[in-house]
Image 1 (tube, helix red, strand yellow):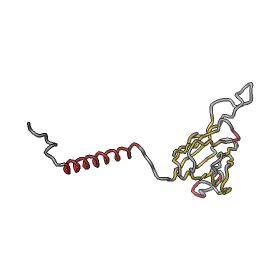
Image 2: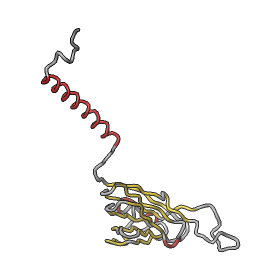
Image 3: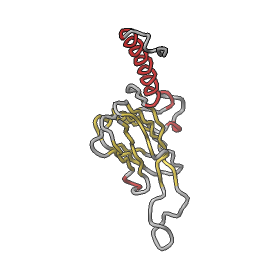
Image 4: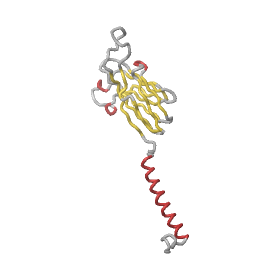
Length: 180
């Protein structure tokens, strides 16, 4: 009877071969997991937020629905935990109507509110308008028609957190989704 190929090898050579196979297969599994589980380092995420309108009559009942028809566009902002969030919020109403941006606890933010850029005789502050106010560690900012704000904060808590316009609640509600 002849010996098989493995029985001709010494124990040392078999251990070396097993170690090489384990290293190669471990590297292959490790590389594939890197593609499946994606982690990105915290970065600055920039969003543009506008007010929009739903197509229904918001007059009081019995003629209308009795609810505001305003919404946030987009109504969902998704970031990773640790990201720095930069929101450019613009009140694009064509009539004199205020909107506010309210974040619920635990989130607070810094905001810079700019005047209506269309009222300017020339570009000021990169086309944003003159600064009307700078606010630190607040949960609410109010914008008049045509005004815009730059809102900044760090996404420190994972979960889903609503943001709203309390003037046009409940329809003008969006959600901050923090993954991680």
